Image (cartoon, rainbow, N blue to C red; front, side, top):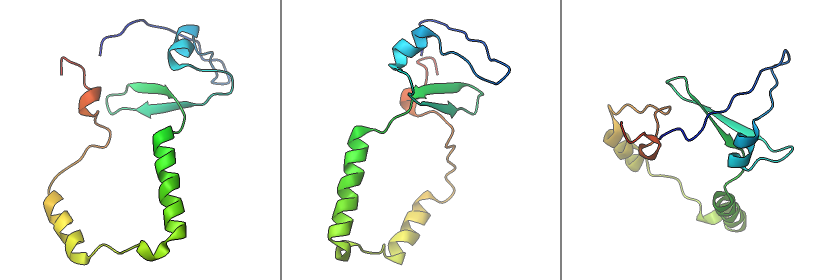
Length: 108
């Protein structure tokens, strides 16, 4: 992904900094908002605004409510299925720090 603009800030003796106005605007940051840092294997750091995904939060509430209301619906995964899933992924290495396809630059 191409860089649109660059911004800098200075780290104080107490390891604090002011987020540049241009970055605050892009992230939609306000006072007391939280930041999330994703550290990539290549040393880059992705900074995003923290916050729950409203769709995911609603889905998880739905699941929790359904489990509370109907615990009898919960079932264990049969051991044969667990073994089959293990066989399907045997020998496959996954780098959890690798970018997803949509995160890759067009040049990669």
